[in-house]
Length: 79
Image (cartoon, rainbow, N blue to C red):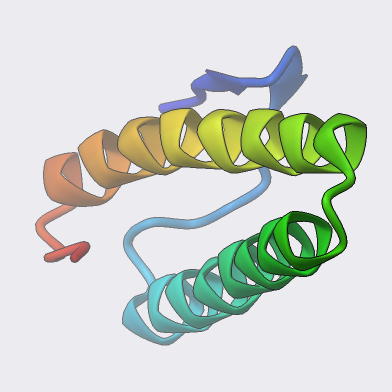
């Protein structure tokens, strides 16, 4: 089953447990990068960078929700 994520067809095999775990870890690290960027912008008082980081975090969370649905359909738990 193919789902659209962000306008692109996904290339992930949600029936392969190791690939799902790798994807979860990769996306968690990327989200933490966005959080670090937001915190750095907040400390510097850069509202434009803070807003940009917040939008990236929001988009990332929305994509994660779609990935969670696909993983659950395949029988995997996605935190």
